[in-house]
Amino acid sequence: MKDNHKSWKESKLFIAIASGAATATFIILLFSTIIIPTLTQKCENEKYKLQQLVPEYPKLIKNLEEKNKENLELKAKLNAYRMENIFKDKIPYPLGFRGIKIGDNISKVKIIYSNNMTNYPNTVYIEHDLFNYIMYHTLKIGDLEGTTISGITFMIKNENGQKLTYELLKRKLIESFPSHPYKEGKNRLNETEFIMENVKGINIRLTPRGLSIDQIIKIIYR
Image (cartoon, rainbow, N blue to C red; front, side, top):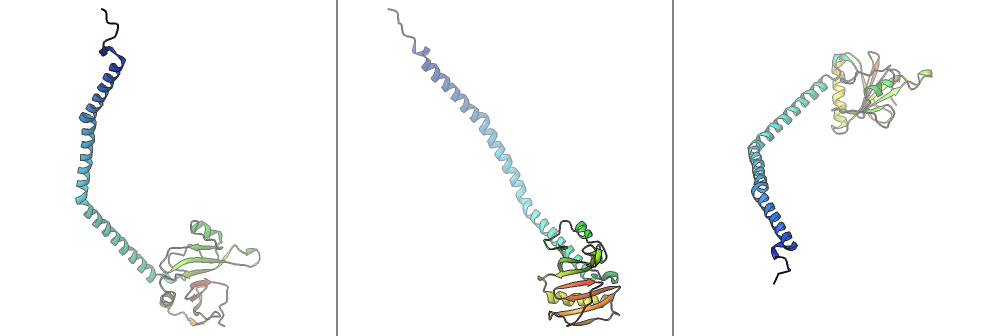
């Protein structure tokens, strides 16, 4: 009698299972013979690179520390030079801030200190050992109102001790202009005030809060 049923080997289920098994076998073979060994080798390579770098790490840190030390030493030397020569060539403008002078147009401030302007009118922030702000005052006479610089104030930083900075600047002024007369007393705010008038046409006023220079404001004791 003729069998009307297909052989189990010819069934769709068997074919699907067989195909799936073959695919799974291929994937396992692929991972076991190619992908996993490749990844393992890659990890070993990275591990080797890291191992090579580890012995160099202390050396790199040491080099970095030496560079930082050199930078600090150079900065200290630069700062010392600035302090010793702050009124270099007997000029009453502090060294490093001679690009803007009394009589210049106030617009020059925004040109030179475009990135350092503050919210206060004509006041700029600076990075310096002694000063942190510079205020530029304008002449207020007739048509020249608000356009011509009549005075400049260098605000003394608190970090170093304002009294200590006051004494340092006073000493440097006396050393730089040894033959010029000066006065020291109390101003109307009861602050200690050091004054040199008409130093090359410039009046100098020093208090623990700041160093001011001007040409037209008469300095008055109370």
